[in-house]
Every structure is written in C-alpha cells, then in structure tokens.
Length: 119
Image 1: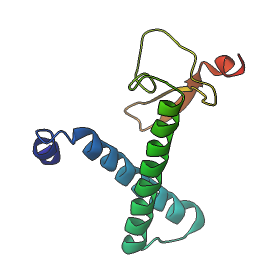
Image 2: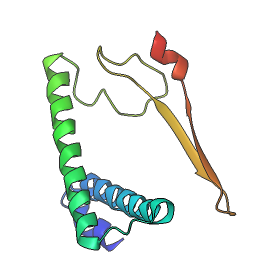
Image 3: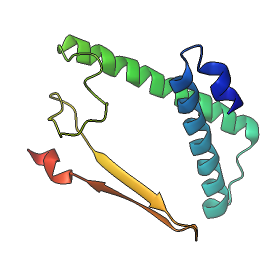
Image 4: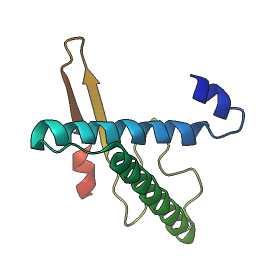
C-alpha cells in the first residue's frame, strides 16, 4: 500500500502494479525451479532475470504500440476491457482468460472465446 500511495500521485501506478506482477511471477518461477527440478536460483540471478524480463516486455510493448500507430489503430482501443467483443487488428490475436481459487488453495485457469481465433 505504501508503494501505491507513493507512486499514485506521480501517475506511475500502472508501472508499479506491473512491476509487482513481474516480481511475483519471478518468485513463482524460482519456486517451481526448486520444487520440480531441484535448481536453487540465487537471489541475484533471480533479480537479473526479473530485470531482463521487464526490459523485454517494455520493448515489445513499445514496438506493438508503434505497429498499431503505423496501422492507424486509435490509441487506447487495444487491450482495454469492453462489454462487446471486437475483432483485433490484422496480425493480432485476442485471447480471453479466467482464473480462480478457493480457500483450500485449489485453483484453475481457463480460456474462453477460442473459436473467435479462427474467424
């Protein structure tokens, strides 16, 4: 909450939430490496992987925005939730996903709208 309070007035709230998501994902990946393959990822290596992952995501995101602008897609029209399904621009695929868990620490994920990929 302190991070949110610090960055929200600066207009960087989305950036902080994105970083938190990447940190949690990296922790999960390191945990799985230890549990399933017996590989202990050192903390400095985990941070290096995290920073590389964030950099790669940022580069791909910027390149995607550039491609959308070149195709004439209005800013903000891709990636925002809406109540009606719309066809993505040429060269893009739209996926919908859902996930959940219960108090017994059981969870699952799924996807819907797969048939729309083949239109």
